[in-house]
Length: 346
Image 1 (cartoon, rainbow, N blue to C red):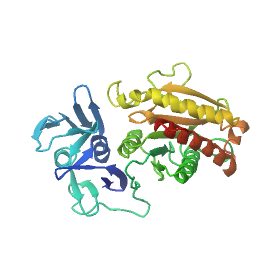
Image 2: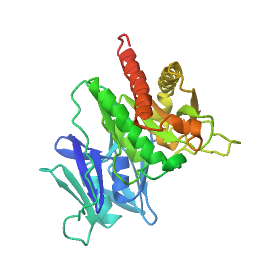
Image 3: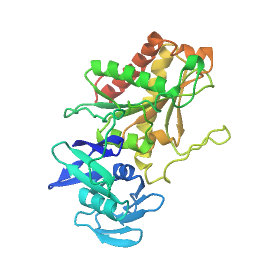
Image 4: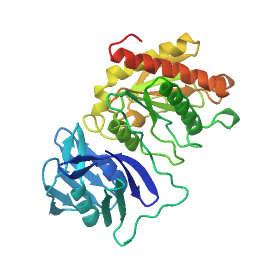
């Protein structure tokens, strides 16, 4: 069940569940709404929420919750559903009231989850600059491709002619989505607003859809002009000036990304072949513990347009025609991958 969650001016889409009349909220979404860092260790089923002054810990399927050391009992303990940890609405209310000084309310009619300061008394305010995050209704059996612009418009690196990474990523994501939608697939651009997003929120939304494939779009100023295809892996890029660190040690938040790594590499190879066939320089798959790919439960790749500070790199996306050509190559490769995975000819 898709809902909208509001914390003041912060609005996001949340895939909540209902079991026996109880509303369940994904652990990582709950942490984001409370302003806390969420962690879960699948090996021990220990979960935690931590912010600067508050810490809450417990175990899935156990009713005892410790908030800053204070023991509290919940009738509906946190639990694992479809390989993802969830908090019950009751548990989130208790955590808000006893730890984060927040009131948590659920509006059944509008499917809206409200998190507001305990002393506020009224509904969380909304302003003209806030646009609710929307998630399309996914038909049963549909194949979903999640597309991530990577950064907010204006953010990230900057290339020639004022080109910025976030703006380019959004244009590419929308162009690929338009092509895939024409093929009867369901593409979802996971962030279109003006604000940046935590990679964990992006991964949580993609998992909740659930997505069959995930592609993130990024760019670099220098490097060999062309495209590089990245997948999730545990080898840091030491000695190159770049070091990526995962959110958690292997076995925690990274487990799903590692489990799909072989298929992710196959998707990357298909993308490289498609680009190379059109004389677009491409390399990969390259693996690193990239934050933008961690936590995804489906095959996931990051496409990096390289050399935007050079005329050769800029030529790949210099105008709408060039960008559309690149998007069609990417969409064609993704379409072929989904057909191959379904056991039909590309």
